[in-house]
Amino acid sequence: MHNGTDKSEIQKIWELLATVKDPEVPVLSVVDLGIIRSVDIEKKEGDKTTLHIHITPTYSGCPAMDVISIQIRMTLLEAGYKNIEIKQVLSPAWTTDWMSASGKEKLRAFGIAPPQYKVGAINQSTLFAEEKSIICPHCGSAHTQQISEFGATACKALYKCLDCFEPFDYFKCH
Amino acid sequence: MSVTETNNTTLFKYILHLADNALILGQRNSEWTGHGPILEQDIALSNITLDLIGQSRNLYQYAAALYNQQSLQTSDAIAATAIKQLTQDVDEDDLAFLRDENEFYNCLLVEQSNGDWAKTILRMFFFSNYQFLLYRELLKSIDSQLAAIAEKSLKEVTYHLRWSSEWVIRLGDGTEESHHRMKLALQDLWKYTGELTIPSEMETLLVSGGIAANLTNIQPLWREKTKEVLEMATLQIPENNFFPTGGKIGRHTEAMGYILAEMQYLQRAYPQSKW
Image 1: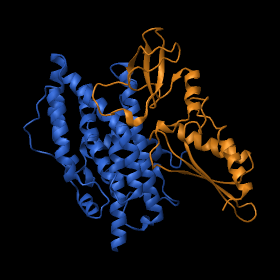
Image 2: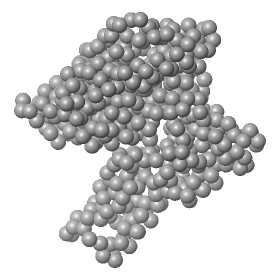
Image 3: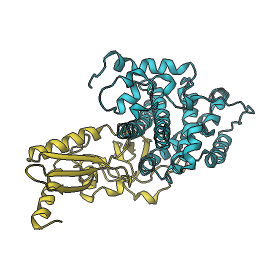
Image 4: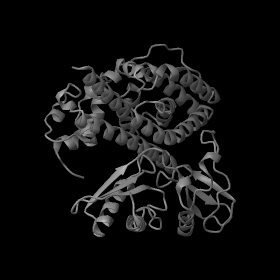
């Protein structure tokens, strides 16, 4: 059961979590990315009160997830919480559809094209297809071309702009 | 052993089978990192491999939790000395790096040598085709953790299947040399594709319990997709009907020993080492 105090405490924890940044893309927080599934406070006697944080991995092999878990724990410890349980929950599977609009804007400002379509809108199995008309984050042109499906990280593809000729990363719809 | 003990041990070995497939193929593919024919494809294969290792981690974590919670250390789930000697709970790393060759349950296909790019992408195609259908079946598993891992992995394997299908077509329907190399790769690897959809005893047991993927459902779909892509690649399915098995019960080809010797050396030479 939550009373008024509990609600604002949960709100404070979400705000704390919004300070934990993606180590690869430091303009994005784990909240922007939709990595935090839920926050719960289990009130107990003395200082045994436990925080339950459920997180979801983005890609199965994402090497940043371990670092992110550690950072979440550190941030909450520094804020005075003693007992923190972070649980990875796989289902429902994470999707770029969960990325916030402000998150997408931050990506664009950072020079990475944000996911442009809703996941259901594209058939992922079609051979020799590529996500069309990805907007160049440098000049805004839709006249762009994919160089490689996989970029420096599993979540990104490599594109180039045929108008301003700059290469850029595209955060793939997943 | 009681019925429950047998069931837990069987489930444990099934999870290891799924994890071992991903890990050993990951280990093989990672031999290409830094040596790919062109930069973008070196990166592509490395990222695919990262997905595979991530899948194996999710599966080994689940297997370790099962091993600890069901006290499988008192059963015959694992015989390897290095595991038996552990005094604390096992974790994902123990399962990957301290088991012996005869307790790895990956298929023979994934342990084969990489050969050239043609052989590597053809292996990836055969395997991704199988993994895609397998994970889709596992979505229906009554084991909710397996279903969750399958749901997560399926999204990534969809990319793997697409990437490898495109390469099979590019090289098969490419130049005279690329077509010739694909023919050789096909002759080499075809015999290992049978085992993918031939159920082992543990799989048969777990299918009847609604846990494991039913390979009988997968087999015709695997054949259909393979035929479709090979035809587009102007390649012919070999006539050969001899399909060696054994990987799923820990009986491997000569290649496996070398893979483990390299992969496990550090962890065995420096027990309890931390990264």
